[in-house]
Length: 380
Ligand code: NAD
Image 1: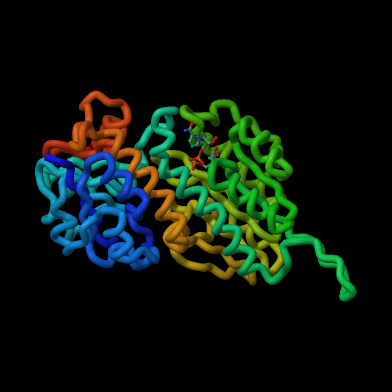
Image 2: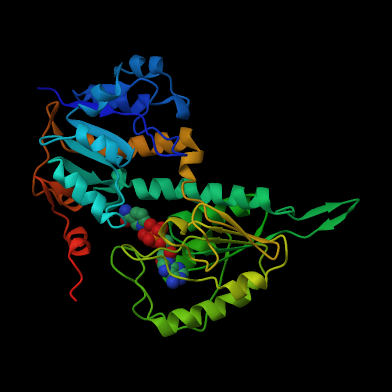
């Protein structure tokens, strides 16, 4: 039986991405799959039903798309979608497994297999399925545009008959995938950019993009976790880091913060005092907002005004740039699906390292150890 892949319309507020775009559909059809797209699923990303059909998909109802063997999602299923899933079926998307363990338990109860794009390992073989990096690239770029739009100043140095305008100073905290893209974008707009990260390896990458690297007088031993990720600092060093960074925050026009530690709340890097020392009109864009934020004043999904300094806590910047974000996401998702297909059928090997790492629920159980740990009752 050929694999049947469904693409239901995304229903989360502000979510404009589509899980698959026509190019990815054509690839999957070529690999032997059938693709059924809910009518209108691509509308917010400017993809028409006709474009999906031309790529080899059929369009149908919500129930048709949810009824497929593999359901391709950007965001995980909403509660009302769960009855549409069942044993023997697979759903793939950004499921927020570590942020929403109860949601994973509810998903497990449907009997469906759930694969979380967030849990794809960062190995060479899995690079083409690295949806987190793809979306971080979009978010880093958009964060700078958001800041440039909000800042009541030019980004570039301008020398005109009406005077010389000094370039904006942008500080990027966390020089991972999103941070590096933010550095590159802010540099292209002509800002003077500095960057900071706890990982020593980030310094060279930030410098190669034209940023000055901020060196703090801080012991960062043990701050590098596995797989290129950072590890949490102890409380004392974390406090010291915030204090030392406040000097740099205070003299910046724009702070873009992107620091994350997998499976934990985002580290606090920008104190309220640091923000209040910035010049009125300055802007903070906190990309860590969905994980609690890097700035003490961040309110996820809101804009906070602190004495004329605005702190933005956007929750879904990739969703605001749906054409390229959908293209990039669909590329990673279709790469994952085809990786697990054999002769047109769904045939993941149970011991495949990528499959095992991404798998959150299977056979009615939550199978991911970290998610299981989060579901354990805390001992009294
Ligand atoms: P991330 O989103 O988990 O974190 C963003 C950045 O925040 C990281 O650079 C991290 O070091 C930094 N950070 C965490 N705590 C901090 C603190 N207290 N102070 C300052 N900075 C802090 O990370 P990411 O962007 O997904 O990627 C991190 C690294 O992994 C990068 O080096 C990236 O190049 C690498 N990477 C490798 C692969 C691969 O090998 N396939 C894929 C993607 C990324």
